[in-house]
Length: 302
Image (cartoon, rainbow, N blue to C red):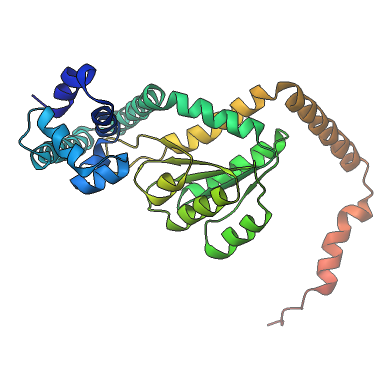
């Protein structure tokens, strides 16, 4: 019997401390596979002896035996993903497998993190300003989210999680604002420092990540763990950008009247700009070209 089945059978009779361990292992199995008993205890905030007793409660000799079973399970899952990719004989089959994996990840996210997503949305909606930073490939996505929030009337600013930009952002942060960190695929140390220092300033901190044990997750007030399983054997990033889009759409919905007024003004100004373009004199249209022509250095003729 696998560890998941054993946890399910014993769950109703577990102590609160044991339930915390059971919840962590079943929802963060990949992370749990690489943690020692001491590391797992620190992550879940229980005594290391509780981890050992938990394993024995499930019928194992100790945590080492339970850990080996978790590692074997994770290894089998990764191998299965590679087999699925190799089994795709056509581009259509590969794309179908990837779409299915994406849908499965979205369902996992809804099943495990919906209450946290709702709390994150509440914090974002009521924050006077939102600060957003993203690590690695997520940096461009958080820039999009900051611009989208601003379009919807929510003051937001994105910054790169490096030392200089983080320090500059921290200077401007105010208590009651929200720092949203999106860290997928990397450890994100500087983002973790940003969360730590922002919390000290009285900000609410939210971390969207694929690993609940990295520093930004541990330092944040609220951590949303997104699944990244795909059929190629490497982590998938598609749920992260999708979540950014969902946050924006939910923000617009929660601020419907204000957002509608802003979009109405936006469209009105676009109409005015189109009108001005249509009635701009030829000289003004050509002026930028003439300016560059007269001020750029001339290339030598052959």
